[in-house]
Image 1 (cartoon, one colour):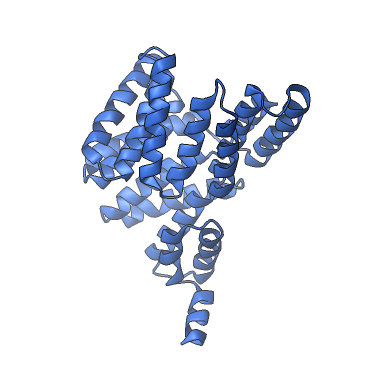
Image 2: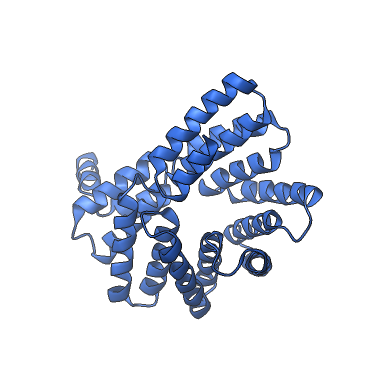
Length: 294
């Protein structure tokens, strides 16, 4: 069942992935007992699906349950919790958790191992969020070099890593380097994830926002609309959907209030305060509430 859940997640079938992991969790608890290491592994898989859907509070709860079980998959459980904490904007806590994961993995695995590289990249992303871009950039380069050497430069796992690094480079105003990384990641994503997949939408969003910042709105808009269409083909990663809707709403200067309203509902439901603030300026329901209140 875990294999089926992972397969559905890789295919972007989030409903099917969540269902498979929940069924696997019930079976493992019945067959192995509630504290078995395989129960923690299945909880970690379920938490990954919930994060992909943008359900960060639920993912946090499931990851904490897995961490409490301890055992051999502790590093994986802590990593899942770090992902959920980071998505909520608690960057210092995420950095601490990722650093702990890296320490555990270095105790268990050889340095030249993909999981070590993953842990380095995760910590790099957290450091970038926490305002340490130079250190983050160096760690991204190291982690990506290891993964490219071990897995190949066109491996699908590279997509998310290059997208995160490109986002950091964009924030550092290294736009050309960010553009190169985004386009390489997008080439891999289109080849490896031909259908609906959050990784493809994330690259399209990042490249679209880079082009927006460079004043190329005419080239950015098709990418953002493609990202939205791909995400709405499934339940989608709700933060990605809300971000795209906010970008498009601002690009169109609020000419489609229904779009703003839809984005605001998603943002408020997911406690995405930064996106909700951007969308409230254009959402009719907020305008009406504000008028009545004043």
